[in-house]
Length: 75
Image 1 (cartoon, rainbow, N blue to C red):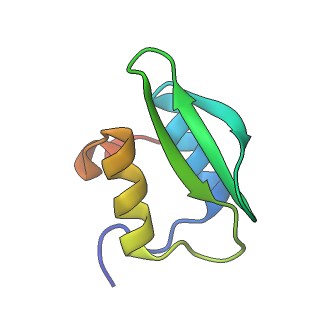
Image 2 (image 1 turned 45 degrees about the horizontal axis):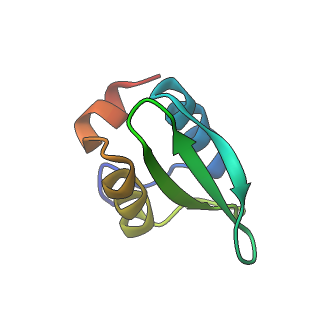
């Protein structure tokens, strides 16, 4: 298991909020678009039960422009 494994949807969006992201709209299926007005970036977050796969979380952070180390340090 990698450093970014074991995160659930709720914990991910809590941390995204701390980086300035807010819910923007629903997307296809059980996905949501989160937007940061300061940076102008948006990211798609799947709203699934259980732990988020590490690769999916890495893609979310890449879209959001958040360094994984910064994400891990945010509580």
